[in-house]
Each structure stands twice: as C-alpha cells, then as structure tokens.
Image (tube, rainbow, N blue to C red; front, side, top):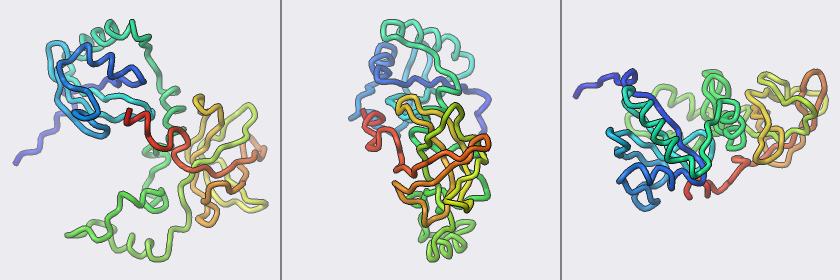
Amino acid sequence: MRVENVSARHGSLIVVGPKSRDLLSTLTSADLSNAAFPWLSVRNIDIGYTHVIALRVNYVGELGWELHIPVEHILSIYDLIWEAGERFGISDYGLYAMESLRLEKCYRAWKGDLTTEYTPFMASLDRFVKLDKPGGFIGQEALRREAATGPRERFVPLVVDAADADAAAVSIVHAGDRPVGLVTSGGYGYRLNQSIALAYVRTDLAVPGTELEVEILGSRRRAVVGREPLYDPGNERLRG
C-alpha cells in the first residue's frame, strides 16, 4: 500500500442551499437523490469534462456539496456552475457569511473552539470517542479517567443579549460575581436574528436554559445556554 499526498492537485468549490441539488443535477449524470447520495456520503461524479470528488457535507448547515476538483479544471467548473445557477438565483458567499452560519449550527472551529487545551469530553464530542476501541489510542487511559469523573467544563452555545457588538474570542463568561468560562468564538446569526457565542463553561452550568453573563467591551450582557445545534436541530435541511 502507498500513501500519496495529492492536496496540491485539487481545489474545492462549495455549492450549498435549498436549490443546490437542482442546480448540480443540470451539470452531472450522477444521481444526487437522497437514496443514491445520502448526507455524509462521498461519490465520484462527472461535471463538465472532468470527474470530481463530491462530499455531501458542508460547514453552513444547509443542503449542499463540497466538490474537490483537479486544479486545472476549477475555473471552468466554476463558470459552468455559475452559468447553470443563474436561473436559481446563485450568488457567491464569503467567510463572514459562513462564520455566521456555522455558529448557528455550533460547528467547532479548529484552533478556536478546538485546541489541545480541551479534551473531546470538554468539547461535548463524547459521541465520537470509543473508549473500548480495540488496540487502544493515544490518550485512551486519560480519557477513561476523565469519563469516570466527568470533565471540569463543557462546550455550549450561548444566546447573548448583545447590543452593538458580539462576544469576541476569550470574552469571560460570568455566573454572578464569579468567572465560570471562556468564549471561543462569537458573532451574529442572521437566520436566527440572535447574537451567538460558543464557549466552555463550568460543567454544572452547561445546562440548556441556564442564565449567565458574557463580558463584551467591558459590559456584562445576559446570555442563556442553548441546546445545540441552535439552527435546524433535527438536521432536516442537511438531509433534505
């Protein structure tokens, strides 16, 4: 078996939104239905004159696909998608829009919400940890001990009564006069029309409905622990 790094040979285009299936279906002979191409699956499909690796996954919480395309074909595929998408009202979106959308879904960002300072249990990612995995893994015993005692803090979404500024990373979370947590990312959710902060808080406070405060620009603002994901909790739009 040989492992080869082909990262430099491919680039990515993301096609998301309620009409993304209709749009892509005009460009490929592949079956994009739920039965043939369910959420979280991967297929090789044809678009234009090339084959692309299509993943039914995205960072914004809507129906959509990641398309991993040979670099020499990215521009031509972009042009095809744009031309086909004009009748569907296609538009480009930027990183700030993506950030707003991923906050509503409580998707963790590496080097922000996820760092080596937090364990999977602190990050509320218990469902991805198999403590009895055959053969073991690095850190397995430490995680077993943490699972037995419980993590000291947990990752939660906070809905914030912000004014003219959202919570920034490293904003302090308070319960009364005591600091009880730290914001790792924050911003405004335009689908929910709410200011959102993702934070690690003391475990006993990581309960939906718990009222806390977040310090924003020297002022404490009311924040309520939410249940993740805040937007489309049943992932119905992703599975659509």
